[in-house]
Length: 123
Image (cartoon, rainbow, N blue to C red):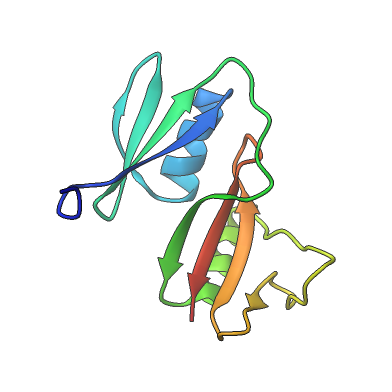
């Protein structure tokens, strides 16, 4: 029923002005709309709605993630914009923050302006 429909992801923010800059200017997503309730972005056909909330306690797990062709190059591009990956003490990560899963997938995590955990997965 929904397999052929466009999915929309939601991420909360208490800082819509900063979130707009982060998602549009830092991550490069296309801003589609903006109102008092939310910002809506396009990420390669997936809609990301950054909803304004009065308060927020970010979850410790990934809220939204992207599959990327070259994870190291993507992280270096984020680093050039002042965004660095999280280093967790309970898993082995390289100097860029990349963890290689037992299945071979390379994964790294970073945070948005509200502390929401975002991830990259790729080669």
